[in-house]
Image 1 (cartoon, helix red, strand yellow):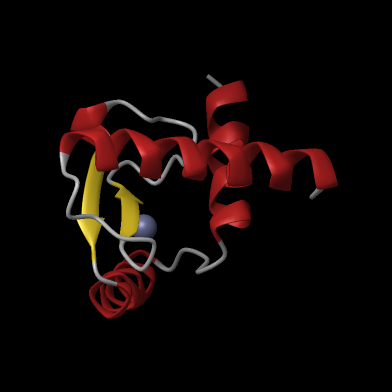
Image 2 (image 1 turned 180 degrees about the horizontal axis):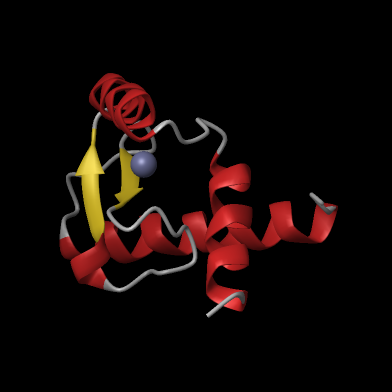
Amino acid sequence: MRTPKQSSIIKYSREKAHKLMKTLNPEITQKDIIHHKDENPLNNSVDNLEVMTNSKHLKFHNNVCKRWGVSKDPLKRLEKLLTDFNNH
Ligand SMILES: [Zn+2]
C-alpha cells in the first residue's frame, strides 16, 4: 500500500541525494536527475548515485523496465524491494 508518508520519505531522500551530488559537483542543476543504481531511492551512498539528464534517465528506465518487467513507478519498485527484503 502506498501511503503519503512513504511518498514524502522518498521525496525527502531524493532531495538529499540531489544536495549531496551538488556538493560534489556544483555544475549539477535542478534539471539533472540523480539516479539510484540499485533502484532503492533511500540508498543515498555516493557509490549508488549517478547523475543523468532527464531524457537519459527516462530512456534508461524504459529499457530496464522492459528487460526486467518491473514497474516504471519508483514507489512500486520500492514496495517490491521492501517486500523482498522482509522475506529474507
Ligand atoms: Zn533512476
